[in-house]
Structure formats: C-alpha cells, structure tokens
Amino acid sequence: MLTRSKLVTAGGLMLAGCLAITVVTGCGSTAGSETAGATPGTSATASARGAASAGPAQAALGASGPGAAAADLHAIDGPAGFWFGSDSWPIPVGGRAPYSTPRIGGAYGGYVGMAGNWARWLGCSTGNFLAWSGANSQQADANYSRYRRGIGTGLYWYMGGPGVDPHWNGTTTEAGAWGARQAAAALAAAANDHVTYPVLFMDIEMPGIAPAPDNGWNDLYRSPCSGIVRSTHISAAVDRAEFNGFANYLTAHSRYKAGVYSEPGTWTQIFGTGSLATIRHIYEWTYEPETANLGEAPRGWCLKGTSLCARFFGGVTASSSYAVMWQWSGGGGVRNPIGDFDQIDTNSLR
Image (cartoon, rainbow, N blue to C red; front, top):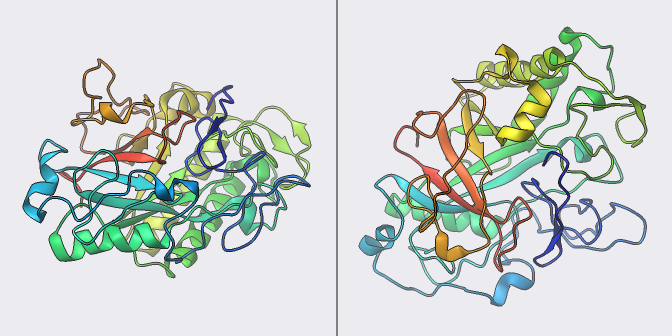
C-alpha cells in the first residue's frame, strides 16, 4: 500500500496491501486452471472457483486434525464474538468438521473470497486474477451452518477507480455510474456463490501492479488495460462519487450491506482527510498493522504480546460497531507460511 512494494515468497509472491494477490511476477494470475497472464512469460496457477483442493505449496503446512471438541474450538480466539478466519487464496484447513484454524487453533470462523476483479471483468490481459477457494468456503459454511461458528462465506469486489472507467469524462455523475456498474457486476458474480455473510466489501487499494498500479484511484489511464497514464490527478470528490455509487446501488438492489477493505494510509492518499474521507456508517475491514508471527494471533483487536492494535479509517475506530474485520497477517506482504489470516467480530453483525 501507499508507495510500498514489499514482495515475499509464500507459494508465489505477494505485494504490499494486496488482499488477494499471489503470482510469480506481478499480480496477473487468473482463476480456474488457467495460467497467469500478468506479463509475457510469467506462470502461476490460481485456485479454481469451487474447487475442492486445498491450494498451493502451503497444503502440507500446518493442517489441523480433528482436534478439540466443538465446544472447545472457540476458546483460543476471543473475546466472545471474535473468530479467526481467512480470505482469498486457499489455506490448508484439514481434518473433519467442526474445522479448526491451521497453525493457530480456534474454530475456523469464516472465509472471504473475491467475487470479481475490475481488470478481469474488463478483459485485461494483466491483473486479471480471481482469488477464491471453494474448499475454504465449504469448510467455513460447514462450521457456520452446523455448529454456529463464525460467519460462513463472505465476498469482496476488487475495485477499479475512476481512472480505469472506460467512459471517463471527469464528472462525479459518471464516477457514480461507474461505481454502480461495478456493484451490478459484483452482485451478478455473487449470485453464483453460497454467501452467508451480509456485507459485500469494496476492495480499495493501490497494489502496484499492471495494468494500473493505483487501480485508477489517483491516475487516469489512456484506456483501462493500457497501463499508460494520461493524467496524474483525480479529485477526491470524483473518487468518493464512485464509492457512493457502488454502495448505493448495492444496498438498493440487494440484501447486502456495503463494506470496504482498505487501511488508513491508502484511504488518506485517495480520499484525503476531510469530509470526503469520512465513512462512519460503512462496515470496515482493515489490514494494518500486520505480523509475520502467527504466535501473536490477536485477541480482540490487538496482537498478543504487543502494543499493536487494528487501525481502521474514515472516522471509524476499533470501538465502532462498523469495525468488523482485520487482516492481521499474510495479505499485506508480511510473510507467514500459510496465507491470509483475519480477525472477525460478529458482536454487532453476523
């Protein structure tokens, strides 16, 4: 995020701030059994949507067995209402239901996967990955439906900013329409999944990869997939109009509540610090701070044995009922041997 580009190896490469990115060069892997197309010559296989396999080279690491009895699985995470979960690419959740979280223990409390990706939707040859694990979704759903553990499955949409809008004209009206079109695409994709969590998140980040390193939030591109910058300024008002367009369409045309995945630095870089940045009534999923040490798995909103606690954005604090998730390891370029781990609070929303 921001200007960072930390690359780490974990069954491929992850870039700073990327919710879902895992490739050999760049972030161009595609879903299904296809081969990544980020740049010529790259090769990385993404998880198939709905596949039953447990994922990449991580599969042999830390798989949990039948483990503790169902009544004991939640004892490790806490306080009451908090659950460990994962997102995007597969993690090796093993054994039988009720499933526990690999390496750190506790009930496997939820999976959040990618409903879609703006670059894939627009047919770009780079950045067109789809991060999904059918196996993890099924495991999370089993824990939720049979044992009332966690949230089951949730979704996010990897969002393109106004600068990659094929119909860009610089107006807030068009930006709002662009947000609404992406929301419609997200809902169409969500209809193919078994979703139990009521929030659909907008993934707003600047991953540093082709075809648009900032995903079109700050720069205007000659065309969405070109990678050629035409202008280096997009106003916060235009960015916010797109955000509002997505959220308003989503809530008007579905049962979903609007949420957003981001972090304080990126949020400020896109929306500034004034009223356009304030979103006190949108559900939030942050990814700062992070740790590589799975032994520091959080209790509540703070990492165990440290002074580091989840930082939300847009006027939302950890005490808000709109602070609902924290990706505390794996997704922002901080190495761990398994994948993305999340802390999920269900006290105000489930």
